[in-house]
Amino acid sequence: MSPDEPPIAACIAVVDDDSSVRKALRRLLTAAGYAVETYSGAAEYVARRSTARVECLVLDVRMPAVTGLDLQRHLVDVPGAPPIVMITGHGNPAVRERALATGAVAVLDKPFSDEMLLAAITRARARRPGAVVIAASSAGEGIPDPAEAGSRDLDDVMRKTPPKR
Image 1: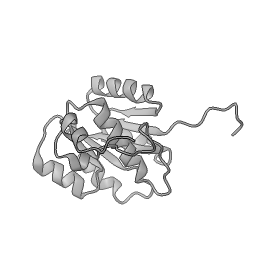
Image 2: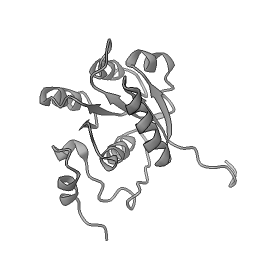
Image 3: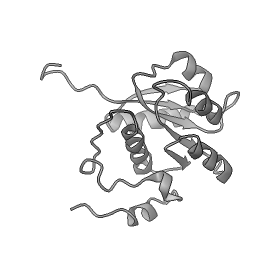
Image 4: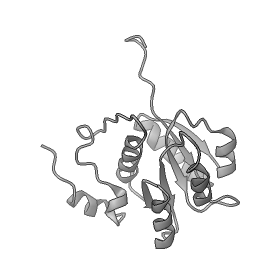
């Protein structure tokens, strides 16, 4: 890459059956500097995905036909499958536990804050083999772990986060 070429942006894939959620997440993630691919459902993602390029999959739990949990189970056996951040409008503790036990980095209840999603994506990207991720807050220092938060209350997570020096 020459000095004049921009760095290649990390690609985040969003799978959600709600077009307004896809549009909002595309806007947020693009503004945060990511390349974004959106899919209206699990079948479309499987048919069109570019797994090698995707560094994180933001996946809705409840979708018609094939659920996010179904897609997650499918991807467990796919070499190079991206780490997953699950999102849900139906906070169910059993679903949360199952998603995390199957390897999701985080399960965020809708509505979630921009900061919570971006922190979860940073953690997910760091889980890719050989990943080097520089986060907005001093190389990842002090980024809250949504999977450990147990709450979607950003203020609660931030109180548990060590201050920047």
